[in-house]
Image 1 (spheres, rainbow, N blue to C red):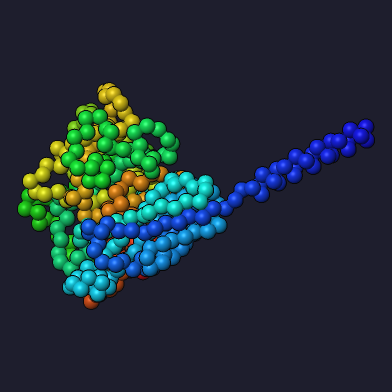
Image 2: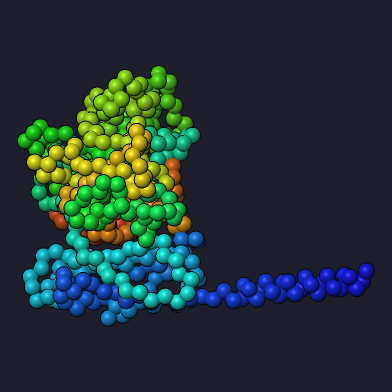
Length: 453
């Protein structure tokens, strides 16, 4: 018996030593990136040392930062093998660009890059070409409240809103401005007809006939809501440094109210939610539903506030109310088409993984990026849960998430860049990772508390 026990002990010790040896053989790796730009569009020497580089481990959210050399070389050492996301941002002031080019420049230059789902298992070196982009327009998202509030004590998914801000120094008119929810693949599973980042490759959609690059020159939408107009385009003026709210349901969510089902919606903790009864616009989907499915009963929570103007629903699929995704699996865009363009007639395509059309196929409107005036990529707060990006890099090379996760009452808010004669100018570098912060509680009231520095 003693001999058997001794042999068992020796065998166990051998196995443990073997396991330790396996652990010890997991070696860290080094990553090297060479930052570049398109020499056809950037003809001066870029001071790459001003770039901010963030590498994020998708398994545990661990972040690594590094600085580039003046010639654009970036090195990370001691990196654990795994799957990572990469984000690079570089901002040059107008004065810096003027000095570098010898030309009179009046606007900042933004150089960005982002890539997700990069698997590194050994030392790796690659070139990274930064994308040059300028702010798209004078309308910007100031605040996006997609998290929702506590599902038992708050309003759950009934109190969403977006706040849209006039970031210019002149009066703008909201007439015909469109708010779009951008559609894309909502998981990281590998399958056919995808891009390297695991997002849909729209060039492979059946019957695709896009002019240009179907992935870079367009976005695909699951919902489009348009501010109405009087025909002249001057019904809804918005002053410089002012904003307007589009609410899912423009009622006071801090108080009980009656649903379309005649059930009373109670509220246990009013501090978790907000009063949207004074929103500028609301989404009321019932009229649109009657167009696509006449006779359909009203959705319980799709309440209409007759004192608040309804936006026009151009398209909506997979929703009976403007319910945003609390997990951060959607992105958002503002666009305004030319007056002669009928947005109702934008071409629509099935997602590329659908290889045959059926009566259940959903077709998503294709919006040219040339019409976009702002776009924001939203993501999960947990890195491993981030889904493939839906926006082209030129529209947004970063992404932003709330801190506390779904149903936390938090919103993302664009940072204040500067204040000129009392007017706040909000930051817009086309990299939401840098441009947005987080409010501990969404604030639709437009006062100083609804801004962050």
